[in-house]
Length: 319
Image: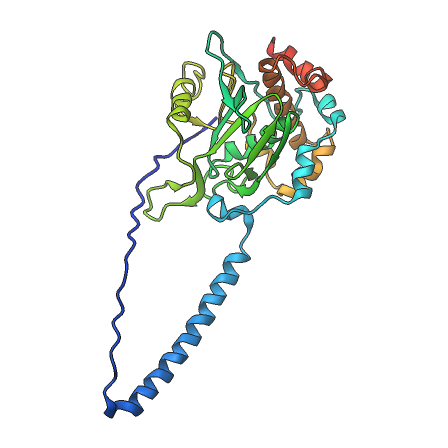
């Protein structure tokens, strides 16, 4: 099951400039002018208090509901729990989840390899992610995506977000790639968060835009995120992941319902326990994604690609 992207809609914002004219008050109205200034001074104080209250209210709102338009950096301790899952957990879980089915990426053949150029100008096997913050399926998949990518290098700038409160699986806790950057030795990553989780004010049902895809981004989605490769899905489902034009994911690899009743912190803390259902779903999916990436890198890094959990995933995928 996958979430369909909404149309982006048109946001009409008009920037208006004002010219303020000033002129001297009549000399006979001196007392009245003084009273007027005093009155406006009181109004100014009231307005200042109101503005201060609004600022406090906004700053204290939950980071999970702000989305990319109100970016909140993921705490280092929280990120560490997700990016440093013990090898024993990966190996114990393999690709088995005791509660929810976990789907492997779809393999495609005879395609021109996808490569991206990293910051140093070097072309490397490309990993492409296309999603949105409002999407509960993206929210679920990001946990595994981050875990898998962390095995190939480091990343920074992860944000906190939750899926839409009005969609299915409301408020699914997750992270955001909207300001993320990646430093990987064997791969290059491009991650797009197309929309936030903040509804448009026009009532259309859409969400505010975060990142505008390039033509190359759009071409990948148009060519590969289609029913030709996902007969049971729909064209343009998200999240969409393209691993080197060799493996594709459209929609979440497991149901976001596995997170019902859990907070972000509870999910992250549980990643050291391979018996927990949420951990099993995240880790099994991460092993699948890792095995797919290893196929594009020629088995590098060796200590990751030959690990028990990744080998189990590769075997299940028949690669």
